[in-house]
Amino acid sequence: LEAVFRKGCTPGVLRNETGYAGAVAPGKMKFGSNRLLLSAPGVATKRSVYSSLAERWCSPLQGKDVEGRGGRFLKAFSYLALLEGIVAVSFASIFIRWSDAPAVVIAGYRMLLAFLVTAVVAGCKGELKPAKFTRTDCLLALVGGGFLALHFYTWIASLSFTSVASAVMLVSLHPIFVYTVARLLYGEEARGLAVVGLLLGVLGIIIIGAGDFRLGQRAFWGDALALAGAVTMAAYLLISRGLRERLSVWSATTLVYGVTALFLLLAAALGPASLFGYGVRNWLLFLALALVPTLLGHTVFNWAIKHVGAAAVSVSILGEPIGATLLAFLILHEVPTGTQVLGGVLTIFGVVLFIRFRT
Image (cartoon, rainbow, N blue to C red; front, side):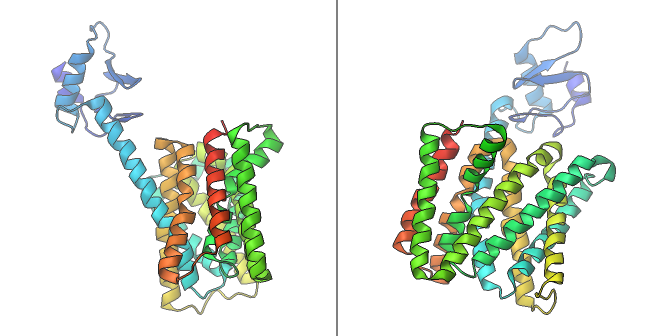
């Protein structure tokens, strides 16, 4: 047995669903239910023997708990990644406010630079071979990318009319819109506290909208654009759900980001906005938007779904309104009004309740 492990081990290759489990020659070992089991015919299975051999020859943990230690570390790392993602996406509104370029140009170059980075990574991993993509994949990417382009355009435009607090809190309502569409199309139902959460979210919208309407029609128009951003994000999530299940994170994001950038830059070229004439400062902000909130934020969230679940990621994304509001207060000196605070608290609490008790 020791010779089998010595000869077949290639550390870092074999993993189970909770963490590192060592690696052995094909056909010598398999795993299931977080257990290492030797599959060689005619050999009596005694798990303690195999575990000790795996720890000694195959595991970099050097005699530690093969089954639990790697899984616990990966899960803890995933939650740390979620925290990093929340901080990253919270900077998006700050970078946008600092730029004086039109909304469609900001969104277009943000997604173009993000596409270039994901394309390089996916290409290095061998995930951009045309044979891997079916017509369904391309269609989902085309439609999903169109809705994602609308989301970025409407939400970025909203920051020119309303406060950061109102914009980020209203756009965070997309889980409720996802449910509404799923209810109409698939008959999904929500009961009990999930319905209470949905009603609280709607009440929060009304309070924020009423407060901003008193500030003027400009702020109210910004709120409407932010809501449109939430609706289009919900449509993107519903359409691209199948794409994320069929492809890896890098290949799926490369397809969608590429389509999104194409739509946005075409809209800028055909509209009144110019694609050129922006200084170094704006280009640094475009790059910061691509690297920080897009790649270190949304891409990290996509990766974390596999390890901590979609519900945990959905609730974690709601940290963006809190982080963005704090950053706007500290950096932009935007003090939220009483109605924005009250409506924001009700909105976030309602969405948390809805996500937690929907199923």
